[in-house]
Length: 159
Image 1 (cartoon, rainbow, N blue to C red):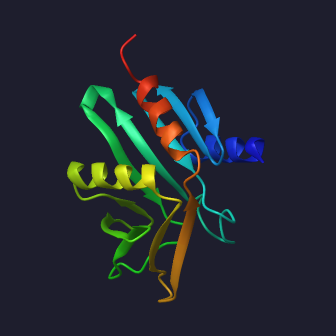
Image 2: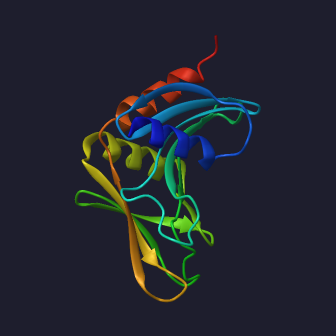
């Protein structure tokens, strides 16, 4: 299972070389050298639906830009451009800013609140409407997420 997850996560990003910082249950931590950034990443339960992109949720550190703990979600389907995208962890709900198939927190404060909720939660879901108008949700178990987020943050510290 971990090998399949790792293989899927390596394909999720671009084709450049990566350093594997660790795999923690369904979450992996990686460092890309150019431009330097580190991230914790996971794929949803059940993987991608047929005809869809490779969905993921990631928490990213970009040290040269001074960015830490930035959320990025790749949806499993293209969304209706009028639909909201909501990330839910337990009782907490966060409205995301979204493009066609990607979504982000609207600001650094919301990123921090989401990462805090990830550390305390059991699962995360991202819900919206597909272009067809049908609702869908991508669900991510959070076991291992906190450790992967910490490993990614440590991976980008100055050496």
